[in-house]
Length: 109
Length: 117
Image 1 (cartoon, rainbow over the protein chains, first blue to last red):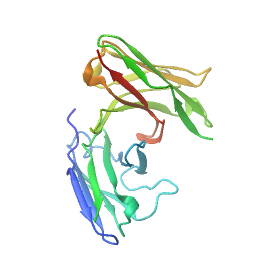
Image 2: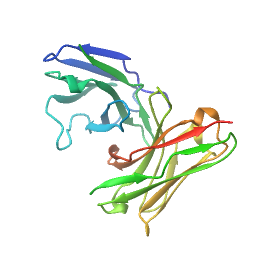
Image 3: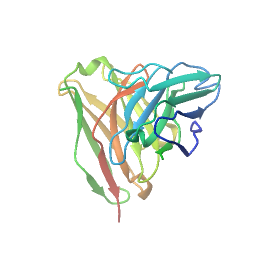
């Protein structure tokens, strides 16, 4: 199973919005609405921020939103804050296994 | 407190085996399966496999088939990941993660495994 494709980096200034894409295939993202997104700060375990394409766990700010179109999912971070600087990973269910994206480093300028 | 607590760091020689434990607190252990995810230094996350803590059935990523075994003990609410025939590229942080409807909603603190001769 090939990894999902994410841009290696993204950036934005405080207050701006940034979108991170995650491209898969018709066997993973395109087939299921089980796309999730994770935020990882250096030296920390990842944290779930979006599940089932566009649902937010309790406690995650509504500045984080998710969407999907065809074989591509997207994470949008609105109103960027300095604490949003982190690595972001997408994951999709793929029929029995899970496949991760390679990760995107978000820099808040 | 709802959490997953993993065993401590390990240093192993190439060819050896390692067994990492993951103990669940604060929720019904058999309500959700557990996935294992690893992260090599400076690299991205890699899904290794999944175990049903209710039935014990497992799914493994193809590249690790034959080298990894996931088990769980409902009496002690503990899951285990054993990786055999260790190589230098198995050096990584290993995470157990609660798998709730295909999202990974709670992560253990991680166990660092270093393979060095």
